Length: 311
Image (cartoon, rainbow, N blue to C red; front, side, top):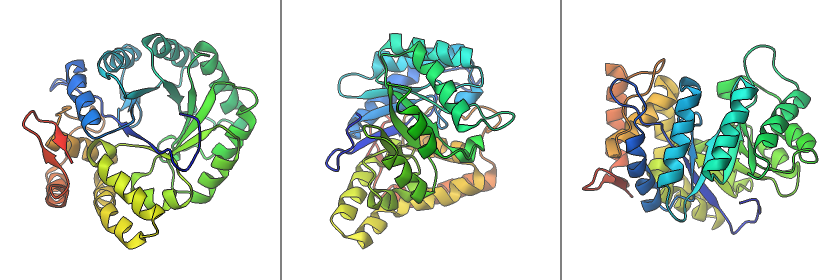
């Protein structure tokens, strides 16, 4: 999982957290979600991240979700759990729980409320989490569109690489491709997973050897074709294949990425229920925009008889 070579491309799906109509956690949906990912040929499930609405969950719910995925993932599916929290006590607790559950990776965003932390403070925070689960690879999760933090991940990696032995990856969810390249070059044996699905062709051209994103719950096989086309030098084909990603991103940018993506995943199955407040359900106009996406998506994705989509 840490070898950054051109012929190894890990594709992880950032999974939505399933809820019942009353917004309680619906862990019983996880087996169907795991089956979906295996059918799509996904390498790993990234649980409890932004798509998973981690900051709208209690610590107990996050732990229950990790347990459910650890039980149901089956053979051949890697499992990553986001454990970052404003409380380092809770982050350490979740990290230890994830390690005991047998996950393959723990990930954490830096604390993002209050005064923006320095690079050194971010490294110290990551070190505390790593110390709670030193036997599990650690991933630094950089997503400034959600956290508002602009500390360069390349600087975080450069400083942390010699201090945190378990730091093996970064989830880079940003459109700054120059910084993406810098982060890839910041330390040996630290893999940088690209997290902006709508920029995948450009990321592959910049050397991406792995990706973690929400749209791979639907479009993982298409993403692999996009990458193959870029590597073959057929950019026009890559962009044509990639069009559904960009169309979804345009709708998500207007109406909210979490709720739009979850609604699309629900349409093709399995149904993970509504997004939890403050995102909630789509308005009528937003629902119409999602409906318009379905025509193009149905050309490459179709629901199966048990409610799990196939491509």
